[in-house]
Image (cartoon, rainbow, N blue to C red):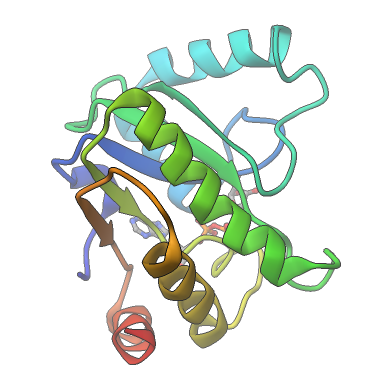
Length: 162
Ligand code: AR6
């Protein structure tokens, strides 16, 4: 669907974060702005404990969703298109690992943005193909995966991929 991921009434929304977990632009900025400081507080605690060197690309971790309608935010770090080797495998890993975290939380409905297709520079068609292929092949208890796309072009790319 076309829409704003921060408005989704799902169990978990996935954040296209960066390794620092300290916020940024795009989806990340919108989630922290709308979700409020409780999310950043948990991100800081994660940095002080499990992820002292940051969350590695392709991995995922959950926090509260603060004031968002969702219950959890699952933060994942997509690969930068121009920089990361094995970028397709890393992008696939973002979707798979996020679904694993969702399973561990008991989340039945999960909303994903087009990870890496903004500031991280992926061509939308390619990002959509990796997203759709990976989610379709995933073994998960999640009942609904909702791709929430910003704009008609992104929606069209995901429709083509589907
Ligand atoms: N809802 C749904 N989609 C959105 C929203 C929204 N509210 N806002 C943007 N998009 P990006 P990335 C779309 O840049 O490429 C941050 O600074 C956007 O149009 O959010 O993985 C992080 O801290 C695009 O199609 O994520 C990282 O440093 C897609 O979501 C870096 O950006 C992803 O764009 C991550 O870059």
